[in-house]
Amino acid sequence: MKHIFIVVLMFAGINGFAQQHQVGLRLGDPYGLSLKTDLNEHYAAEVILGRGSPNSSQYYRRTFDQNKPLSSAIYYGQQVSGAFSLQARLAYEESLNGEFDIAAGNLKGFAGFGVQLRNVAVSYFYHTPNGGENASANLSERSDIDFGPEGFVGASYLFEDLPVVLFSELGLFMELMNRIGHLKVQGAIGARYRF
Image (cartoon, rainbow, N blue to C red; front, top):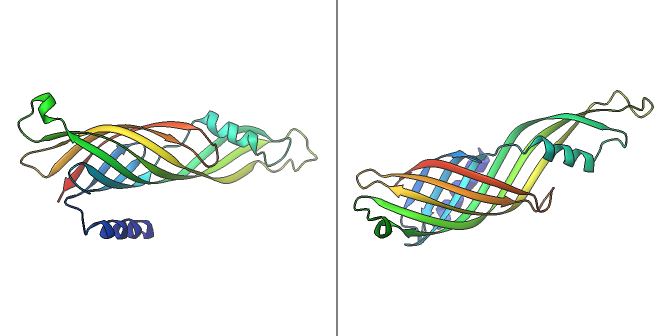
């Protein structure tokens, strides 16, 4: 709840020069609540609060092998839960109505960058072949925090007679914490109510 309060406060600060606001749902990676405001005719700011998908099993296996709880620990699986995600972004938008000869509504292309914070709880399961090195320990619980920049491109469509915006996007996130340089492709579709 405190995270939602912080997001609302951030948008209240922008309210003095913002022209339009949008709130809606985003489905994809990450998925969650999208809050967007137009800064001027071409620029918009967005905050996304939600959940991200876990990384691959290979990703977690490499992370475990780089930081084993015991020197003889042998990885055999993991369980991931509580994947929290927070994004702050800035986008440049341009109307594409002229290029596609659209008379009703407004089709926009957009591109931008931002920062993303992701956190998941990971339970690693392992065994030790050496009975003298705490053989009973078979669980290591950790928090996997990822932070870094992201870039994205996409398109949105504002209906002429409805205050609804549909959007689709594709992006690339790069970790600067935990696994430096790891790249993750992300994409989403969604809808927002404009007011």
